[in-house]
Amino acid sequence: MTSVGSIVGGWVSGWMIGRGMPVQKARHRTMFIFACLVVPVVFAASTTSMWFAVAIIGVAAASHQGWSANLFTTVSDMFPKKAVGSVVGLGGLAGSIGSVIFSASAGWVVQLTGHYNILFWISGSAYLVAIGLIKLLTKNMKPITDL
Image (tube, rainbow, N blue to C red):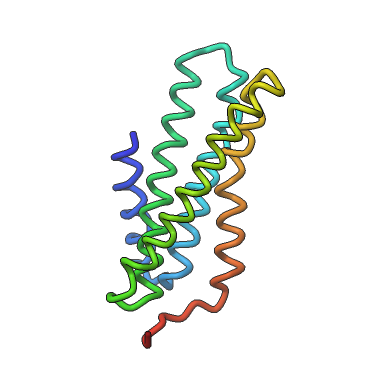
C-alpha cells in the first residue's frame, strides 16, 4: 500500500501541474488530500475488527507516502540543486528527533491512559496541522536562487 501511495502521490500533483495548476498550489492541494486520507486512522484503536484496523492503517501509511513524495519535491521546488540534499537532511534530522520524542512518549501515554486512542488522534491530525503550517510558511513561495 505504501508503494502505491508514493507513486500516486507523485502522479496526482503531476497531473494537476500538467493541467496548468501552479506548482505550489498543486503540491499543497495534493498534500491536503493525503492529510485528509490519514484522518480515519483515529478509529484504528477503537474498532473490534482487526482487518478494518489493518485497512485504515494501510491507507494512512499509503497517504503518508503520497504526502512525503510531495513534501520532498517541495524542497526541490524551493531550493537550488546544490542545497536540496542539505535541506532534506535537516528535515530528516528534525523528523528523527520528533520520532524519538514521540516513541518515548508513546509508552508513557499508553501506560498512563491504558489505551492507544490519544496516539491515534495525534497521528490522525498531525498531517492537517502540518499542511496548515506549510501553507502559512510558504504563502508567497518563490524559488531561492542564491546561496
